[in-house]
Structure formats: C-alpha cells, structure tokens
Image (cartoon, rainbow, N blue to C red; front, side, top):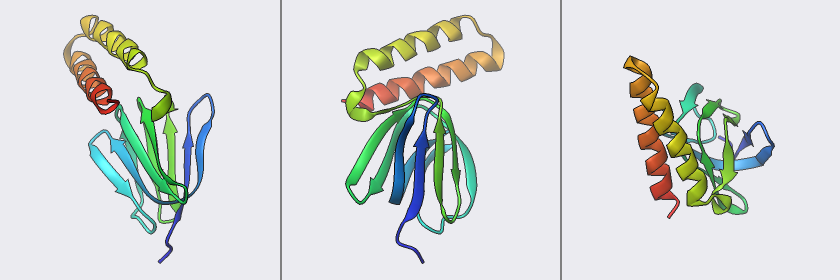
Length: 131
C-alpha cells in the first residue's frame, strides 16, 4: 500500500495544488468524503465547502463553490468551478455568491428552486466555516 497519492486541484483560472497527498477531504454533494491512497474509484459532484488536503508541507485548505472530483486508487483530481485558498477568501466574496443564489432562487420554480435553496444553505455554511 502506498503512503501517498497524486493530487490535483484545478479551477478554470489556475492550478491551485499539485503533488503527493496523504488524504483529501472533499465536500461532496452527498456528503463529505475523505480520499486516501488505494481508495475505491468514485466520481462526485462538489457542493460549496472547504476542501482540505494533507501534503508533506502540512494541511492546505481551499474554498470551493462546486465542480467535480474523481478519486482512483492512484490519486484524486478536483475540477472546481471556483476555488481559492481559504486564507484569500473574504466574507464579502462568499456573501456575493449567497446574493446570487438568492436571486436564482427568487427566479426559479419547482426543483430548480429547491436546488437554489440548497446552494444558499451550503454557501451559508461555507461562510460560517471561514470564521
């Protein structure tokens, strides 16, 4: 069994992290998932939350707002809609995302309205986690 796995975190703007990781805590749409070396293959969508990767240099935390994660026995790749190092995220940035989600909710009906409500709740939880 390997002690580490390859990890990649990429957003449309840039590659945020790459290297050997011991574990990756992923905020999956169906719940948090901790990926480790030799993990069973899985693909999941992301919900807004904090992604935590443990690498040689210690733990790194990133705020993600959505996207996908693919985990294999060899590693984990996260393709985030938007990702930023947690230390660089202000409450104003998250509040802007919450306002956009509120507007989407107000203009939606049925299942789309439910999805927008869930996104608002996830973003509010992300805002709480930033403190």
